[in-house]
Length: 212
Ligand SMILES: [Fe+2]
Image (cartoon, rainbow, N blue to C red; front, side, top):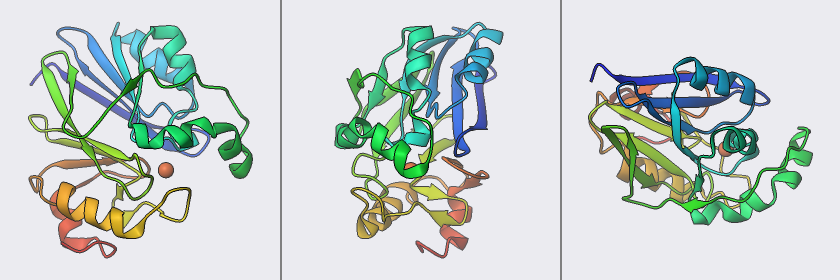
């Protein structure tokens, strides 16, 4: 466990939490949701001499992948996305216009990720949970042994993701949270796509939007 590394920090333009997960022993890493500020993300990777195996996305809203092209260019790592968010990825330029954010082209995803798939980071591994609702292809990443759940915009501390954007579904997000996230160990740390961290137990107890 001592060589497990995680750094999470908000990136512009919309304060998405980007995470770097790494095994400091093997120097292998993944980047989750590089929504902007590629310079900072690359600096963090280089300062620990990490090799990026994959760039993974919880979903294809602009603020979660605007820097993905730059990170791929610099590291050679593949871009990974659930196929049900491919349509959203394709309309990045429209998303940017709608939110008044300068458009930065991003190449298409290289690999599909799907429910039950394993994401490997050195000797650590995480599970892909398909949690539709915020978007059709929203996923969470659950690293059992390190007790971390990256929830993207599906679950926030005391809140849930909006469902009024393209492909949003309020019944689906409730079902995803109840059946796939609230069933995990209570002490699991929730690292959301925006805002402060939480835990599965805290959300089960206090989240007013989806009760256990
Ligand atoms: Fe989102």
